[in-house]
Image (cartoon, rainbow, N blue to C red; front, side, top):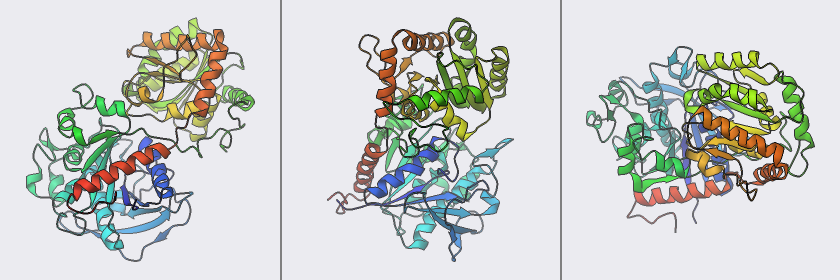
Length: 496
């Protein structure tokens, strides 16, 4: 089959700038696609917090972006995704991007986010023309790049970019980028695009909705989430749009970078280990207990948590369940995260009340996150919603069977433990309640103490499971070809 030219337009990309799982995907999937022989490139803003890893060079020609009342000018920097030859372009404009935050700062989301990401979207398209490189398909991500399909279907339909297909990935439907109607004029779009079957929602601009209506094909990050978002309970007001576009919507599980997330080689770990030889994991557990002030108890299971402390992630359920868990079970809890002030205070209080049993670090620390994965015996994710989730995949890779609520990608990745046969990968519960969470942690705990052979099989099976990007990359190639054929139905398709 012919190779494809694929452009990723994204608000974040690991390891240069990361807020969540979107960055992990964009940092890994292009490399897998390039290894399959495709010409893949990435465009991202140059925020003040971007890490300039590797070799960077600035393009001599300035980039004129046709937005607003006057052309916006940017400088383009080029580097490579680490460990690959995939070009990564960063658009520098201090007025829009020269601040440390990606989406906001200490006082919330930036007021000009609509303008900022219109600049990214139109800038990425303009860069293609400047490079004289016209992609076959543009892969867009979340509300920030919903402008790309709209632009291609309207003001750029008659340009050299007019035949380019778009694949639009929903990472989290809850965040839709609502903005003032002024954004339509700033994007230099026809005023008629401010309508219910394009950009308008509740009297405001909704770039997520615009992307869903205008994209050639749509994906999301797990099959179960693709079904959930078509329902009123999971659609966050866009379920009707997603049912309308249902024939063009596919759920493809995210993968992980198995080279980076490997307990046998991870440079951030104090000790290494692999399936069949977990001596290093026991030493990582001891190091974690020291790091978070937990009692040195090698025989007690540690339940690890690395999460944003918000209700979506179900951390309020864990806070409410902790007294029962700690007072009725021989366990320890190791938690890393930040978020809602009330939850931060609740976990600080728990660490003080249950000294030596609950260890808490408020904030984020990448090396500690990996140590928790490596040093924990189980990993807890009580999410109310979880489009895909990556930390449960990391946990299984590091030998910590997950305890998860049955939602989204957690259903697709964590096979339920069968107490009769010992099969499965972890422990799932349905009801989003403190009692259901405590019961399931108790079930995992009893497995650890009473069925050690089953527990060892859960660990080993999870560590050996292939959660890499290979299968997912092949799925995306199929969607890209499908999108190209749909965008250009009378042309010879690249699938031939």
